Structure formats: C-alpha cells, structure tokens
Image (cartoon, rainbow, N blue to C red):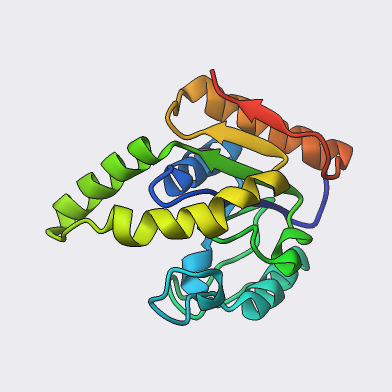
Amino acid sequence: MPTKPYLIGIAGPAASGKTYLAEALCKELVDATILRADSYRESEALTPEAIDHERLARDLDALARGEMIRPPAGPSAIAPHTFVIVEGLHLFHSDTIRERLGLRVFVHADHQVCQARWIARLAQEGEASQYDEAIRPVCDEYVAPAISFADVVFDGAKFLQRNIQRLGSLVREYRDKGFGHGATETVTH
C-alpha cells in the first residue's frame, strides 16, 4: 500500500452532484478526507480566476507529503489520509492543479438536471435562482470543456450505489497500478 496520500479530483458543473459524490466516495474509500476548492475562493466571482490555485497547489503538495494543512476558509485543518478527495467547480481549469491529481473524475449532468437541483437548493435557502443568467454561462464557458481532462466521467443524474462502488474500485485500481491519464472511463449504469 502506498504511503503517500492519493489525490482524487472531482469537477463538474454547478449542482451536478460533485459534493454528493465526494461525500459518498469518502465513505466508500473509508480512509479518506475531502478538500473543497471553494475554500480557496478569493472573491464571489464564478470564474476560475476567483480561486487561489497557487495556494491550493501548495496545500495539495503538503498533503501529498503527509502534512496537515489549513485552508484559507472552511475547516480549521485537514489531515492527510490514504485518499484525499478534492472537489470544485473549476478544479480542472488549472494545469498546476490537474498535474497533482492521481485520478480526475468529471461529474456530468445536463443543464436541466443541474438547474432543477440549483433551484431546489436555493429554495431551501430562501434565495432566487439565477441559473440561466449567471451559472449556466460559466459552466458552458469554463467547466464543460474540462471534461476532456477527466480519467473518469461519472453520470451525475444516476447516483446509484453500485456506481459509487465501481468508482471506489477504479480509484483503488488507479492508485495500486499507478495508472496515468489517458483513456476515459464512463460510470453510468
């Protein structure tokens, strides 16, 4: 078993299910923790430039060395585990971040699914939806093209337990065999 933490990136459109998948995968892998790229957001802008990718890269390097980190926002500290799941809207936008990830998972869901989830989320928070005006254009311009960097494409509309288990198996396989990036696997049914 490798001694250094294995870094898994999860990216995808807003409300595609990134957080749900990260939490389910964390339970499936057992010795895992989650680092949210939103903890490195420097402004309210929805563009990739709002994320401090340099700081995130330094913290990923520290976790990979087995060191504890303190993200600028969010939990007070994150300790390294066998698996570190990093999730965020613009996670694959930066070469600096992509090259540090052992496995890159893109959660794909069409706009209708994402919009329905976004509206439901905001309704619970008592806010109005601006999905078509603010979220959709950002996802189309910055997030959707990042699917080309994924090793695994996960269907965000079908969160079946067997798909999460299959993804857990793929994560272990990539880590144990030292697979690099290349052919893309799809987890859909």
